[in-house]
Image 1 (cartoon, rainbow, N blue to C red):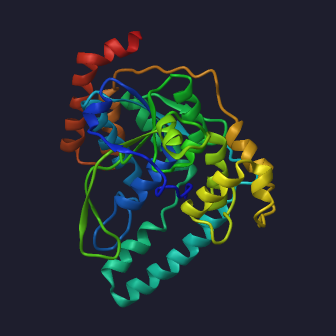
Image 2 (tube, rainbow, N blue to C red; image 1 turned 60 degrees about the horizontal axis):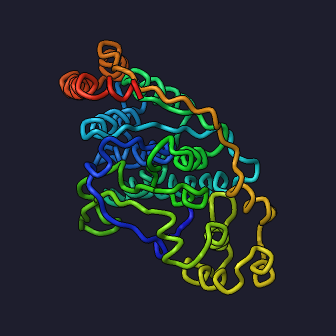
Length: 338
């Protein structure tokens, strides 16, 4: 889900080449959920599958998008979620939404409504432990490093950015800003045109970057106050306060400034204490001993994994493998020495 702060975010559009030569921490679960939602059969709305009925949308997205990033000189480091805090709110919310999405999907199929089938099917995306392991295996074969976070992947990405292990975090979720990432890159997982939901229209998608310091300065607030705004609007750890969107939350926090003062003006409506949510954003559990190593792609094993195991087109996969090999010869050796 992520906190909804788009009305307050100060961002600038960039090209992929702007990030060339830079290490980027990728919020793995966020991207994989996108791939599972978007990479689907146009008519049925179902995710891509092989002849055994195994879903392959996540592998398709990871392989082709990562190869594209490497091709333009970006150094991606995938960061996977670990165990969420016990009070994480979004898990239950997502479950309820998925039940409703499945109901809508069945109704749309019965009515033959292809547009509603597409929309509802995207909202039924489910990430399994098996998919996560397949994703890690694919990255290893590609020579692309990944980090296993002890808890929230967004928090781990933010720590890596703040520690200058990476230049920026790539995610669609703005919770990463609350965790303190210095830079957030959005729309890096997609490119080109995107269909406008509910309309027969398309919009152009381009990457954009948010600089946290610039954003806070332009709004005249601190990171702690940004966290308070997020809590009022709703985060992955609390449902938000009824009636508070980004603008109203911003006005209240600008006036009251502290958690103590804000709590005097609202009715906190969840069992999770506001102090617990606030403290988790400021002091999340992260892995500090992060070791990053890029490697050469294991070309034959990679092709066999995708083509023999999951029935991808060998011609298309070998083209992507060649891209990885060429980049490895021209620049990856230099990366590995750093």
